[in-house]
Length: 420
Image (cartoon, rainbow, N blue to C red; front, side, top):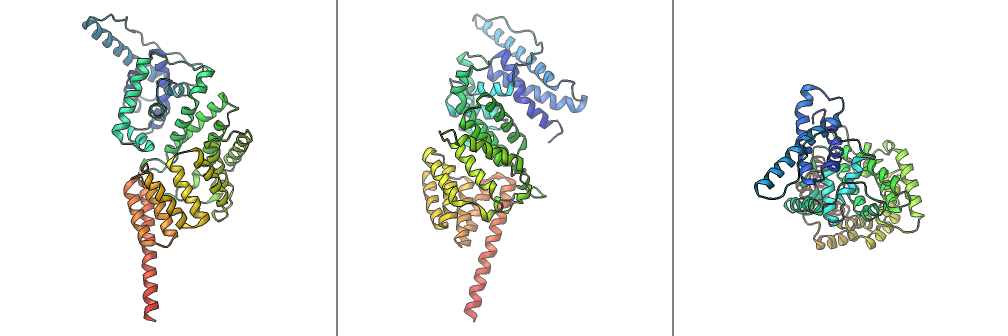
């Protein structure tokens, strides 16, 4: 990664939002911004950082958009269609009244789109995720996701609805999709679906920043508070999740003295306030589960019975297969691995996590708890083969090697007993 890449990634949704406010063509604007980013990646290291990087990128993208409009107008004239006068000025676009990234977020959660399409488009435009990363989050093939994103862009373009600050009513209608998007962006940042780094802190930090803005707009919404609390309580553990070489450290092995106590306190206060508001949602329950983990001084002191109750409530309101998976883990921690393995059979039969590494990794963990080390090794290796994250792969292979040693030690003990 070059020195300017983090800055370009941060500026990309801001610039896209600004260009959309002027030109109102999502697909063309995204292409123009990508060209501007490529130009910056080439020129800035050579010529130095411009005085106003945002304005530089907007100016370049606006020129590309002007060329695009001229080209489209000329094409329509050739085809004998009435064509509007092209935009010929690439004057700098003025500052927005608010946060362009937040405006872009609400624009992507467009009323003409299905929730799934809105979320996919926003992950691409605001979160900067690749189509493959988004496909993995949705548990669908990359080709399917590429088609979904293309259709979403075409739908927005055909709707004629401009990129503008949503009204209070529009924000309310789009809020559910906005929250789901920010949840997925945060998750991709906290545990990257691929690459050499376990985390993409830029993504999780931007998700939290935008969640604070959403909370400012909807201060009385319990699910908004719940999601912000969940992000804070989860991100509080970030410093302890990797070792000196970037290796993954599981929750049970983390140095809890490294956890961010200020974030934990803020998260606990938020979820406590949200739960007092009466109507309980999925994000509030997930935040409550995260709070139980964070308030345990050591892994052995985790209140697993309380976590199991919370997951049982969550399962009743959510059909998410990941919730089913985590419920199986909690059940195993309370009632033993055999109970958890039976619940995993239901998750596997459901089919939505077929081929997902987390299903294999969870089964491996529960098989290890049950003392079935040979079967656990097979599942750990299967999970390692299916993850795109190198730190996760290395961790899973290490676990496979460890349970193999445990199996060998057990065989050795059996031989000793036979010999005696």
